[in-house]
Image 1 (cartoon, rainbow, N blue to C red):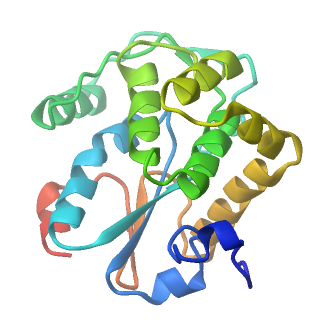
Image 2 (spheres, rainbow, N blue to C red):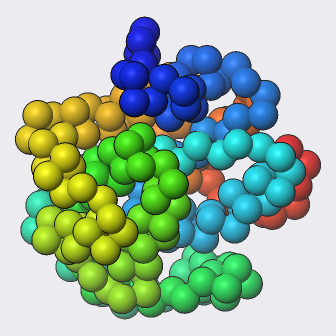
Length: 211
């Protein structure tokens, strides 16, 4: 937890997820990974929470750190779980194409979390674009060039981002997010901490309407 916020974000207390955020009944912490299809669909759950007046803070959690930097080839997806996700995506108005490879998302998560802290207004679009890169266009989120291209299109200062990646501060931000997730008992994605309660997994919409 940060004892002192940098001057650039001192007027935005929710930029850094912290123990204080855990105590705020109107703040929701949501952990997700960009390769997680349940997290992709979970965007619709966050919309429900926001309609109900919650501030939803999107945080990174690398759910498959075992995936090598070059990614991992996967075959076709069949079965009730995948059919259910496809149905959920369609109901939420989301295009879902199963990608042929699973990327290592550590760099993408670090870059996205850095944007959330430094460019909060651009963060929602960055987050959405990277989700769509994986689940709509089948692009490789492990490709640093791809990440930089999307960031550049949205006006992110690539030199500043590069410095944050090189000095380790962007990666440190992911570690802080994951440590907070472990602190409240989250072990997988998607996970939400809502008003003192942990919600794990893509529960039905009705459950979120009751929060």
